[in-house]
Image 1 (cartoon, helix red, strand yellow):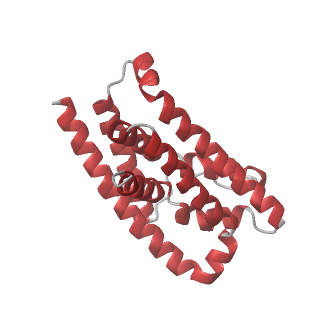
Image 2 (tube, helix red, strand yellow):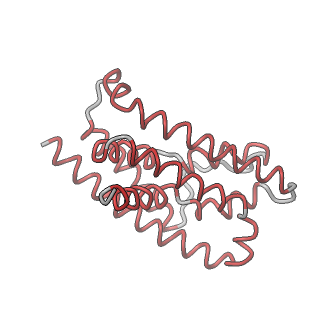
Length: 195
């Protein structure tokens, strides 16, 4: 138990930073603007369910998927780290790369669920956490981070109104730098594994 809590805190922090629901607040709030609270809640549930489904698939079947495709963990670390670094730079610099424009509000949950919440960075993080800690800690950390993400998305309009657009943007930029730093570590570990 003494080792479980620090490991859980680390795994939760890593996942929460990479899921980065704060980045999704302005996007989700815009896409669900004018919808009823029940519809906003439903879209938040869809976003979390989509992200959760993908994260748990990779949590339980990651090495099986790797074996089928003939991919090693170090090569996935390097590839995932590069994509995660690009995502971090995108967040830090406020650049939009591959973000759907003018999407229908009815698909807000799906678009937020993937690729914004659960993209290559989140998948890479889950696989690395499983490799380092086993299945239990990452499984609980995923549930906790998705629960916190749902709360943030559900109240995204209120959060954006309270914080203001400027503060939301600054927080997204800072989280982007953290994601880029995590990506550099993942790439370095992958390169060492390949060597």
